[in-house]
Length: 266
Image 1 (cartoon, rainbow, N blue to C red):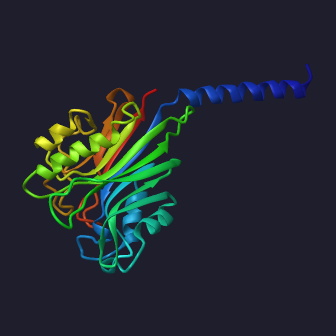
Image 2 (image 1 turned 45 degrees about the vertical axis):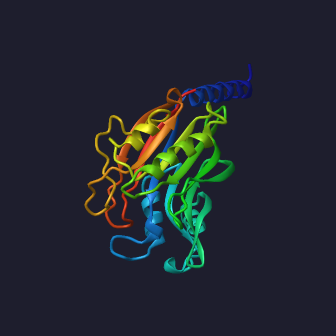
Image 3 (image 1 turned 30 degrees about the vertical axis):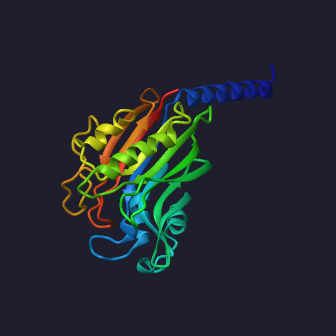
């Protein structure tokens, strides 16, 4: 056998070994949920670059953003989803839930994963002018099988009565019922404590990623004393939680971000 043939054979073996090793590696997805308060921090300064730096500090694959402005007077008419996409070098999705100060206000998603589609679902509204929504994105997992996954960014009502929140649970369930087997992640500000009946209602079909993490206090950012931001997954057998933690950021928004690292189980 010639030397060139030996080198070619060695290269083929190396490539095959590398491919096998990559196929055996778990598919990990880093998820961040962040209520950004339209980019206004606890210091009352509007700073979208600061929000982008917080996001980049934890290197997420997908980000659920709540309280996002686009072309709104209070946030200097900035297209915040587009600007955050530019600063983080991630694809951005945005849907309006209400018109506000000459612009749009709603939820957004940033993604390093390929986006194959998205839609916005308006949630039941018990109060005039307080329309809520769930932004649903169809993505492709970074595994050899290119598994389709679904990612939802949402922000539900905050008032003492949980009636609207309970109806929102039902509406989100209806929105994902069509394809129940698709691996799905729901992230956002649920304005509900862990022992609330809202979180218990979500728990009928969703799995909390914070079950073994203890209290995850995210609000208010400077002195957090409430756990109201969550990442939930379904079906339970398709996901393994690797890490769950609150990002130590007390200034950039009135919420601290929640980071969850997941493994997609084949």
